[in-house]
Length: 462
Image (cartoon, rainbow, N blue to C red; front, side):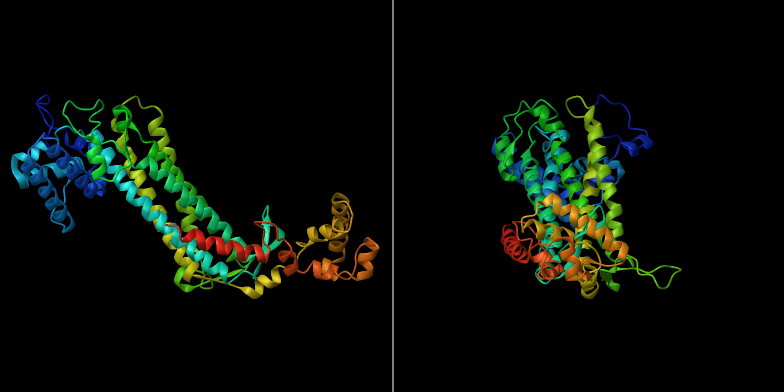
């Protein structure tokens, strides 16, 4: 049997070894060790500040916890399954270092409010790191966009050629998605940054603690107003996982486009060797593994969000052991989002090149300028719906004749409608089609250049 755990004398024997392993979380919640130590140091300071323990005892606890931190960083403290979880592991090692005073650390505290504090401290740091990665990702998007304001690319709806757009405009759409992600995480942070420390197991404590004191030490914005809510709330985790899932949606959407663009059918980009792999059997192939992996990893983050919702939906107040299952999903989602943001940033910055000649050709080989023909007629007094129907017939007959709109002779245009003049040819060139869309937020070059200025301004906000 395993060593008897630090339960009260209510228990006469230790856990069965298999149950001890099943019950233990040390294999994954060791991720929280430094946050646990930081939270415990604040708790020790508060105990001394309020006179619950002496200042000498508080100092001994603080210094002992700092030694545990250094031992862990140096690889000298590596608790195993017998510790059950990171909280017991740290307390046990602390007591070995400072003696019986270490047993006073848990005064006026439960593992329930302790783990809630640790998780929030961890997630608070990770949110800030992810927000910085989003800024790095946005910067690369803007850098590439600035070089490609007048590079044209086919725009699609229903994955059918629709209208040509500026490549910069296309990339800035992802900049805006990332901006919402950055802002969304800031909002999530505000609800992560609330302290449950001092809520106890569920009902508070009889000791004269000062919850605002520890909250200030740990740089929390506020404290939970209800102890039951404080120890059982995981709304902040659900919100984070939702925000993480949306980030992955955005990365996956661009991944799908890159995969298409790299295909022989599109040939819009060339993948560099540094960010592509080959086939084990087909020597000619260059595979877009990075965007494919991002697209695939998106599902695991979605799964963690779903799992958290299912965990929470049936839990009565207050704390339940089910909540132990929140951490692996949070940790994995954090790691997945960070890895995918890092990989996609490198891929865009170093791993692909746009094939400008192919793009220039692509925007001239379809009927993506048909709407501009209708607009041309509408600007000359023809009701738009009538113009729309006229152009639809023109496209139909042109396809049958194997022609594009630019191939029609002026006489043919004027037979269609007398409003057509020689300037129709300029109006339907891809560059003019793009330049003419100068409405706010459109793909017109003037609008795109202003959007780039605005993007740089947004990037300056930290």
